Length: 606
Image 1 (cartoon, helix red, strand yellow):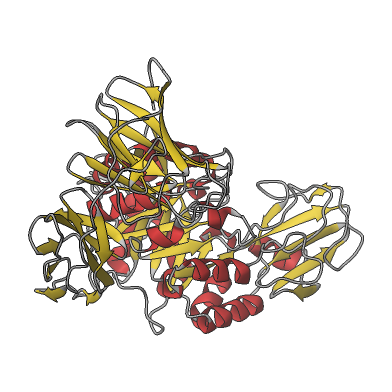
Image 2 (cartoon, rainbow, N blue to C red; image 1 turned 45 degrees about the horizontal axis):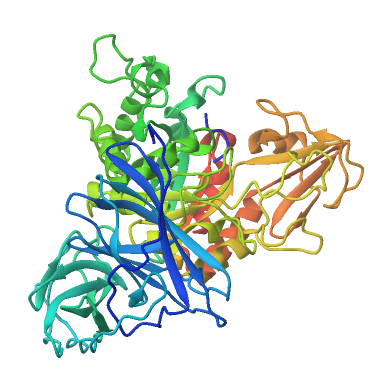
């Protein structure tokens, strides 16, 4: 979005080479030409930061790695990055991600985690051998269990059972994997998985572990589709049409919730994101209490036509949204947290996703306005990448946060996120596990605008929301089509992706040529901010000169602007349908004309 208004005491570093610790052989790639070492990077009394480093000491590449260790009772991993970390009792296992499994000779990779408790790791094993690089003799791994069968499938749970595995020294337990991730460990041949989303597809396999803690091959997979469907992605005939309403719009812009009614936009949308709640001290927090729930609206400003009183339980935008939902009961409202200005708070939130999710739930479900909100939206700019500030929470942090929110809010609530549209090679989409997180969200709002603008004061001029690439685009991958293709390629379903539309333009001044690619001297003047202007102003002050890459541009005097029109929006909606996308969203209502012509173009063409 555009306008967005661990404490550690006594840090210490401790290197534990773990040489000579007891290891057990396994079927994985031999570790005799590799070592693993542990570093305690920080310690704040009740917890600590840890890092494992795996080094290839051999002459050939290592294609994958698994580090195992034991913690004393009371010590655990609370969050991890750059590895998939699971546990069985006090035994912990870390496996490489898809991007860091290969280690060239002489090279090393690291993964980190936050831990709770006072203990240190012991009994380290790397790919089944000792972490100091010596081979430890062992026995055969267990066989694959039988393919699971599913029964008693509900909206949120499924019962699984399978045939026992065999092992020369006995099977200790079984890991149950959902979509390739361990979700439970049992000693029997059955398991009930709960906390699932209604109307959702899952795949289950099982893996046996013997008394020497060796894991055997996974079983065959069983596909499960939960019943219900309150959180299924939108279908082709039921596209999401979502607009952002900004809490601060009621001030200088004088844009109230009632304007959604008078413009006709309320009858053309399905969802509203209310922006923004703050993210601070690892928690969700109120953004602007006066605008949110205190401001008294007069009768002519109110959706109901009735003035607020001094003693009514709820005033402000929240009460106006309640009145809007009474007139348009089909509209769902989500509370969006973060944004450009407040995304710096997500680093602390990601350090304890469960506590963060609890705080968000308690705020969104506050009894004063619980009926107003149907879910939560997260606008983190950007996980494990740079925005207003740079985040270093790790690739798994975003998925961990979304998983915690889904677990807390349950299957019937909406849980969504605004996400980057950086489709460049090595760009922001690749920095976080958006595919892994997608199983926990209803949809992603792909911010396919603000690709280019007058923050590059001298240009080159370029449309801020190109649908496709074009000859001379300043940066490859900075367009909607490349962003959507990137998300699809990493495994995000198309039906969980919404195309983003900006109801505003971005512009430069000091420009002499009509076509994109011209030089400039700085940002063009704007009503509220340099280099940016609402569509409702630009449509008459600087009419369209031409189109490029599915959007429009305008050259008037020395100013050059790019913005979407009803015509270019129609083209983008047609493209979104051809791609099987879940719908569209836009930033934000107040940029449109008084009769909502851009919102109408989005709605009528979806």
